[in-house]
Amino acid sequence: MRTWVVTELGDPEHALNIIESPVDSPGENEVQIKVEAFSLNFFDILQCQGKYQERPELPFTPGAEIAGTITETGRDVDLKVGDRVLATPLLPNGGFAEKINVHKENVFLVPDEMSFNEAAAMFITYQTAYYALKDRALLKAGETVLVHAGSGGVGSAAIQIAKAMEAKVIATAGSDEKTEICKQLGADVVINYREEDFVKVVKEHSDKGGADVIFDPVGGDVLHKSRKCIGFAGRLLLIGFAGGDIPEVPANHPLIKNYSIVGVHFGYFRKLFPELVVEAHQDLMELYQKGKIKPLIYHEYTFNEVINALEQLADRKTWGKLIVTP
Image (cartoon, rainbow, N blue to C red; front, side):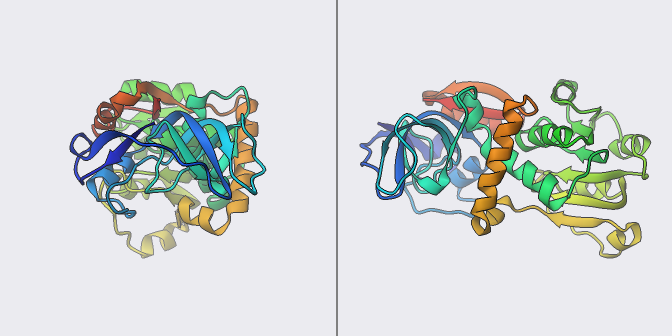
């Protein structure tokens, strides 16, 4: 079995190597999965570089999202051979592999009509966006949501979920190609932030002088500008800091405008309330089967193209999710 392994820290081209290794039978509470697809995330690059909060000992295999078919089960598992699943393996034994054993708590059934590529692109982005909008923002039908980086993995999920929750969606992106993607995903208003001032446009298209909810995975200056176009009693969701800078906000500003700054840490939520994550997965599968959400996939790569794909992801010229098919 082939596996991508980080043998030394650095950029992916220096850190990653393919090795051949056998796979043990699954242990108690585990299933063995033939990997049909796995997704790439920006944090995979950071893990290769040793710059992520999770720093496993060398060597390790990256990869947090896979999809495939169960080929063997351990004891005390209610899943069965042949089940189509998505799974979230844990480091050091990540998903950049052709076959892998995963604990049953990290394995989720997917419907027959969902492709493995789509299943591998589902978990992190859609669970994060769903948790952010439903549980943290308490989004209501008819409210206005501003989604930054709308053509990205989590941004594209947020657009679709917000529309499924009957909200009005304004989306930003950095090119005309990407704003067109946002429009195709269902955004009511799209803004090329390189050519337009999104603050002005959001105010023009909002009833309360600004958006009710702002979904921000970027941070930095984007967050500061977002504070200028959030409406009364709005909720500014901190998803992440892809822009690189972690901003500081003067405490009097939320008080003056009566808005809330809301943290969204899906990983910690999942650790504390795994049963709610299972419920959310079932809700998301239902939305998929109704045609209300569909993962946005940029490109499908072969197993040998992982380094090239990660380099494209690092250049931030892609959109949606990047998928590898072993």
